[in-house]
Length: 155
Image (tube, rainbow, N blue to C red; front, side, top):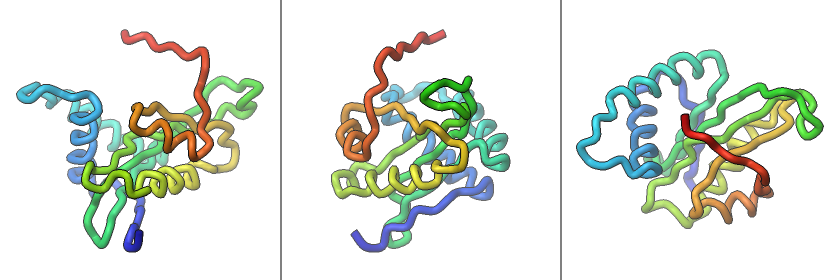
């Protein structure tokens, strides 16, 4: 597909980034209409304000012929060093989203490949993500592997 541009987003586009973040959250978590999301939106806004300038988080938009059709991000983190990541540096891909009208056109694959390229920094030993069933095959195609023995506790 011609005309695809992926570009990094700065704090100067925070309002647009927030609109996209809330769209992603609405779809992923199926937030019921009428739910007060003001506190959630404010927490996300503060996250971006703190992490975009420091490089702890990198956000991007996917554009086709000037129209924004998707977004994505990377959170750079440090975990305890281990045999599979001796330096402890890792990248967590998140907020990966393509609007429904543009899905199944390999735009998500292009986006995730771009994010992987951005995440391949010196010292990064692991790139991981969470996925929906819809995205699982795409991530497998990009050589992501299932992480066994993982559990999650909501607190």
